[in-house]
Image 1 (cartoon, rainbow, N blue to C red):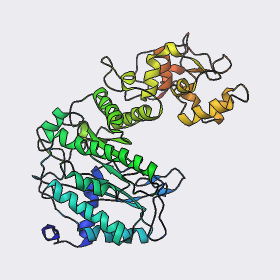
Image 2 (image 1 turned 60 degrees about the vertical axis):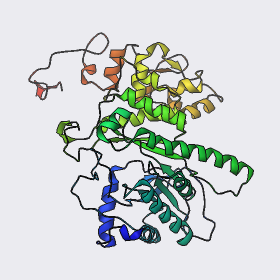
Image 3 (image 1 turned 135 degrees about the vertical axis):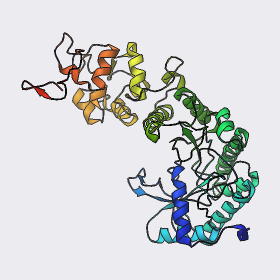
Image 4 (image 1 turned 30 degrees about the vertical axis):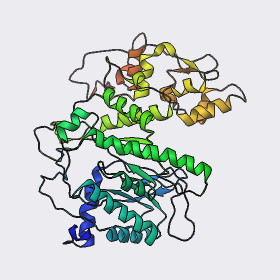
Length: 439
């Protein structure tokens, strides 16, 4: 197969092209696996994590993040590597990927590999090259570090299965939230071809867990699970639609993570939206990640966070604050009596703080000072909790009042019966007038 791979560039030139092309794939994820080396090879993936991030034991971890090739038979309108684009093309060989991985590892630059790819020739051809790369890396180079690899939609199931026994995590990109959007911007791809390998990985993972329960030394299939990625802002779906899709993927396909990638306008195409200032919707992406965290760790349902009347998140407030403000009838919460799940719904209380509160209150009644020591963010939580039946400060349980305080509106400092006043802006609001700062 390798005689078909472009070889007219040096390894350094290929690395420059294919590492840059990989930056748009955000699903470069932490391993979530404790598989250690057996002492006969190089590396391990104990507590490994993502590029330029931190593992659960506090170590800073990095991965070599590259595409196997930026050649592609598809012409997805949003992709910089689309077949119709006139860009520099390059492809690695399996030996070159192994060389890069081992040499970077020996120099202590990386602790693992994130390998994605365009589709060269066909899905089967590309998947076979990826499998050959991982097989050589594991069995010839004896690399025992973390590997995250992409499963190519449409590839033979046997190739995906074989590759899964060599990787720690595998992902299949959903690309766009709905089948209609996929037909519009990626007409050569189909939702069925994308979901089929997802289901395969899920089923094989379950079979593997049962096998390991019977035979402890059985080989492990994708031990860190699978993830996916959706592009946000290229198509008109609401946050509600996107979050419902993510929730469905978690429940039906047992995914570990759904990643949200703000649409970056790298191509000029009439089917693509025009973004204000040509800037990706990063704040929207951030709110979706916050909501995703609520689904995975805070026992929220997507239907609780957004509905027909509120189909998109408020960019000014985080999703948990928005939910709390719409459900003020459930607040304030007495922290010394509320159950764990209700504590999780209080803005400013994280899941670690909630665990600490439940443990600490067994020893006695908690005060606001105690809550601060447990990690509670009181500047948000104080509007929604009581300690011993008392709030930290006098607070009116009114959505407008609390919202303005959470947003730190300067007008709240001016006089008024409740300490908050609305007034017409004047020409002097940006300067010190008559010695009084009224900004």
